[in-house]
Image (cartoon, rainbow, N blue to C red; front, side, top):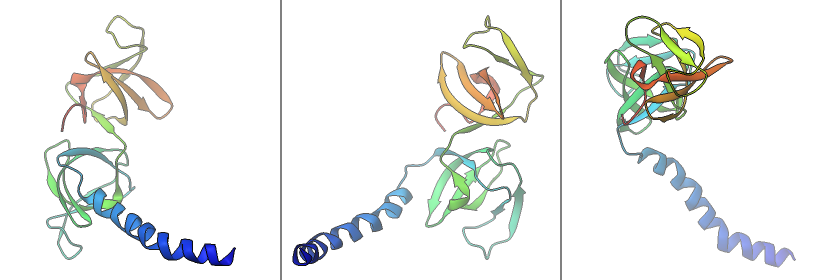
Length: 161
């Protein structure tokens, strides 16, 4: 029994080590651009891809959607909803899709994916939430415990980045 366990370790352990070592490398190969959201409560955006570079902006909005436009080792060049670009540490971003309400005036959050569905809430520009599926011009949108559908044209972080 001990001999078969030893043989298993000799034969398969190297393959297991190679497979787990490849996971971070594959994550680095994700094709840009792509959407992400801020995971951290405080995120420093720097002018270059290193902690040695000056901090250009500090984000304090977990869930804020960002567009990742370039990948470099453990750093991501992002673009925020206002068009500002800078470098952030990759581990402080989440692959979960977020969105932010944009445009003038209040955005309707409806019970279904139509302008004829029941109005549930009105959202101010700048409200951040989690993005669900989008179809026929409407997106599922969750803000805290509130859930509904918002017109795709009123959200930044939807569609192809």
